[in-house]
Every structure is written in structure tokens, then in C-alpha cells.
Image (cartoon, rainbow, N blue to C red; front, side):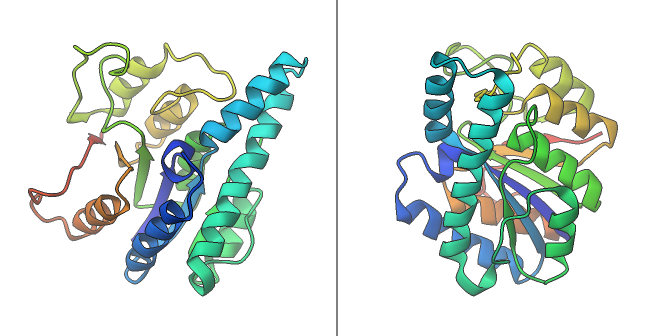
Length: 234
């Protein structure tokens, strides 16, 4: 099974501690024993901080995107370091490079690609391009809600939803560099157009991400200690 995993920077590099990268590295190594794996890392707090400063000093949105891309690639390099020999040693800068890197048999780790695309969108496009079996978006919330649960305590989580429902839910998100949406509108549209099997889940526990991916590959009944998130399937 080929898995594309998007790991939010707010998860991987929230406080920029080695423990987060090492925990994910251990989980990714386990996944890669049975599956091909491409990981796309987000920028998180550091990217948003840099973007905010850039906006305040006069940068336009494209320039802000390029700054965010640089931060995502730094996070990717830190994860490659934590993975050691299990990882492809360089970060691909586009989808074709990612495909070439995948042929190495190693775990491929990359960040952003071009302005106007969040790393979730990059992950969705990459999953389509590589014909991945599963897209997993590991973020700071445990699924897709009817509204932002951090601002609306009465928001309800979707256990399952169709790609069309996902698009309808997230289209209200403002498309700016540094967006905090669990799934941005472009990623949602890519998921819809190619009917990608997708899971949006809380990625704070790397072990749970491992458990979810392994469970999905085995098509077994859900385990009590495995927290799936929201399943998006046509």
C-alpha cells in the first residue's frame, strides 16, 4: 500500500523539540516495513510567525508563501535527520522529484512546493499523482467539524463524510498563507476530484497515526485505543 501522510507543523514542530521528530521517525519506520510512504511536513507556528512578520514588512502573499515553504522544508530536513538511513536523504521540491525519490525504497519526506498550495494541498496532489492508496492528514484537531471547535464548543465532529461534503464544509476557509484550517479548500477539491480515500485525524500521538494506518491496511474492525478521526470516502 502506498500512503501519503501530511503532518502538520503544529504537531511536528510546535515547540521545536527533538522528541517530536524522533517519535514520528519511530512510527514512520514501522509503517515503512510494510508500506511505501511519502511524508509532507507543514510549517506550523514558526512558519506563521515568519509570515506575519513578512506581511508586516510589506511582503505580498506569494512572497509569504515562499517563506512558509522554506520553513516546511526545514521541518522536513529535521525529520529526515531523525529517520537516518530509513529516509531518502534529500527533500524533493516537486511531484516528479518525489516520484523519483520513492523508487529508492526509502521513506520520502518533503515540504511545500509552490505558492498558493498548503502542505495539505501538496499532499492531496501528490497522492493523486502517485496513485496512492490512502491519504492521511495528521493535524491539531481530531477530525473535521461543522465549525472550528476551538472557537465553537458546540461544533460536531463528522465521523464519516463524502468528498463533496468536505468541500462544502471547508470552502469558507480564507485562502491565505499560514491558514489554520484542518483541510484547506484546494486540498478538499483535489480529494473530491479524484475521490481520494482520506483520513483527517489528530496527529499529536505518532503511535496513534501508526495504529490507524496499519489498521486501515489490514481492513480490520476498529480497535478501542485507535482514534480514527474523520474518514472521507465517496
